[in-house]
Image 1 (cartoon, one colour):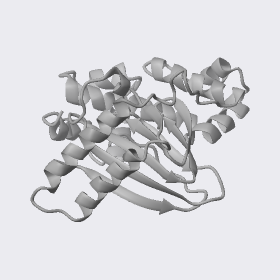
Image 2 (cartoon, rainbow, N blue to C red):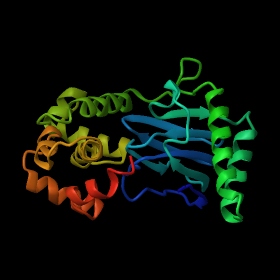
Image 3 (tube, rainbow, N blue to C red):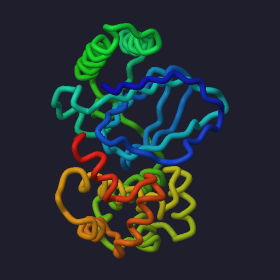
Length: 262
């Protein structure tokens, strides 16, 4: 059973070095103090102390702190087969948990079990994670109609464009196409997209495409070439090079390593 949990204080202006997603693993991110801006999937979230975001397996995400103060966070990852099937957890979900002290208490218990293991710790961690998930299932999501996640109009246009990219990644998308969709000039869009999401346009498009190729590699019998073309890569050799630079192994090696684990 592979469960990881880290608690860390990070300093002002921290930026994640690069976007990532987890294969076969879910993530719970809890902000103990401070604030941060999170771009998850294709949605912008602004988090404050006491907020928690659930990130499902395969969901692209990137984060940075957005003020002059330090912030402490807890990150928990665990196999995606630990949680019960629920519509609440089909996509990333933000929760305001400030009024629910049991949430950080459960995370602290999981952390202590990981830091001070004995023969029962693995089973206890699994039980605590399931209890945490049930608590979250009983908590109204922050991105439900009851509490909205407000963003500025220009940021909302970037968010809508990110969703468009996610829905059309297999097509021939260019910076000009994306800028036109957002209603911005190419120069302004490029700068604004980077500022809002943390990604350059091409980096984001490539990351979205790679995320899809990973899923197809481990869930289908399609050839590498078929997967490359179906995900918007017009050259299978180019795709192989991009894939290896990102993951350190070839698509074929990735398929062999992970297809039995999912």
